[in-house]
Length: 215
Image 1 (cartoon, rainbow, N blue to C red):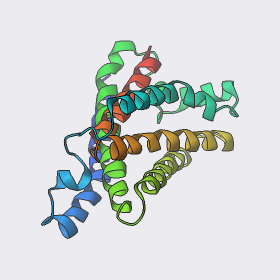
Image 2 (image 1 turned 90 degrees about the horizontal axis):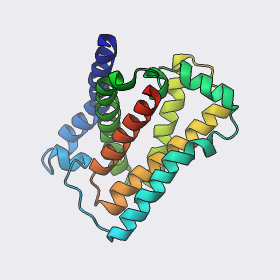
Image 3 (image 1 turned 180 degrees about the horizontal axis):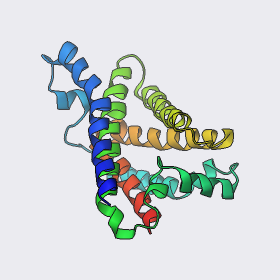
C-alpha cells in the first residue's frame, strides 16, 4: 500500500510539472498583465449558460457514454484480449487497483482526481482549448484537442511496450476522443469556459472506474 501511495503522489507531482509548467510560462510571458492565471486557464467559478434541462440531458448522455461507450468503441477487440490488457496494464486504473477493495481508495483518489483529472484538464481543456479557440471555432478547438488527448494515450501504450494491437489503439482513440470532446463542450458551451466541470467529471469518473476495478 505504501508503494501505491508513493506512486500516486509521484504521478501528481510529475503531472503538475508536465502539464502545469508550459501554461504557467506561457501566461507569465504573454498574458500576465492582462488576466490572472486562473482566468487564463479557466479555473473560474462555473456559470450555467444554458437551461437546466440542457445540463440534465448532457449529464444523462455523458453517463450513458461512460457506461456503454467503452463496449461500443472496443467492439472489434476480442473480449478475452481486452480483459487481458486491462489486467496487465499499469496505465489503466482497473488493472492497477484490481482486488484491493477499499485499500485502493486513498491512492486511487490522489492519482485519478488530482493527478489525472486536475492536471490533465488544466493543460488540455484549460490551456490548449482556450489557445486554439483564438485561432478557430470553439467546436473545432474542443474536438482537435480531444484528438490530441486521445493520441497521447496511444503514445503511452506504445512507450510502455504493452502489445495492445491495432484494434485496441483505434478503440482507445475513439473512446477517449469522444469522451474528451464531451468534457470540452461541457466547459465551453454549458459552463461559460470554466474547466471545473471537466475536472470533476474526468477525475471522479476515473476514480469510480478505479474503484470498480478494485472490487
